[in-house]
Length: 172
Image (cartoon, rainbow, N blue to C red; front, side, top):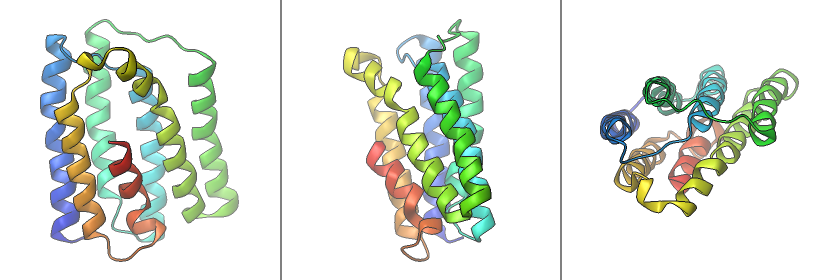
């Protein structure tokens, strides 16, 4: 792992601190189910990248750590979320990405789980559209910077090195 991947992952980790403060203060409203689904998918993603021998595993691992604490804070703030057909579909995609991993290999698991991460963020995007003042824009921009550094630090333009970081940068 090189310094850019490490720095990008560290920046992304540090961006959780202001997010947690904004959630606790009520400034930022976050969808607990989106964070839970992202966590499950990031576990698959990090593991599939490690299995490929890629250096891009640190960023999704940082997200698993930060997401878990974020879920805990949101839970303590009283948000239990509402499970709908959409969350069920995302959970199915998480399970499907494990099936893809088993049947089609590591690279396809990285693609499937990254795609599912993006789809899982739709409720968060919907919330941002409806109530943009409740979205921690500076935090999300910090995640973009961290992901962009991970792109720059990738060893090559392969799925295992840059696919997730490119998607995370575009998503914000």
